Length: 160
Image (cartoon, rainbow, N blue to C red):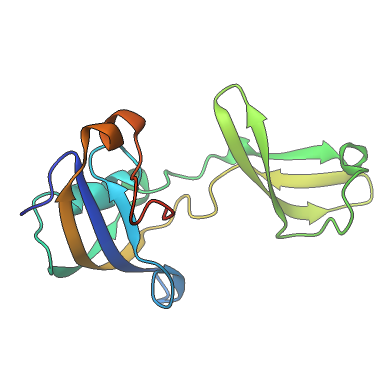
């Protein structure tokens, strides 16, 4: 069986940056399971997995435009520090999510000044090529219910 739309794919992966540092991995954790073709993983990786078979291992580099997008400098903004009076331990690197009209947005604190806080709304991996090492563990057809709900049921349902 090969990976096509509406297949449930389970895979082991390691994601590295250009310097070879591991950014994310399933090693020592649960493998990633998703329904192919529904946009649950970055577009470039989904495209690279299309047509692959169970047991295949491969490496692929995904350019930013097919990963988490290019960095958008307008997504970096200063906000009055008074907006964060309820947050203790405000420091660079802290991340939190806000609701916007377009859905949830992850913000990362870049700097904390005396009166201003510099926030970055770009995905932390935006603008970066993504270097994946992948091994496809299993492939199965998604059930009609899984497809209509947009997520996996039963074994593997707790995964990404």
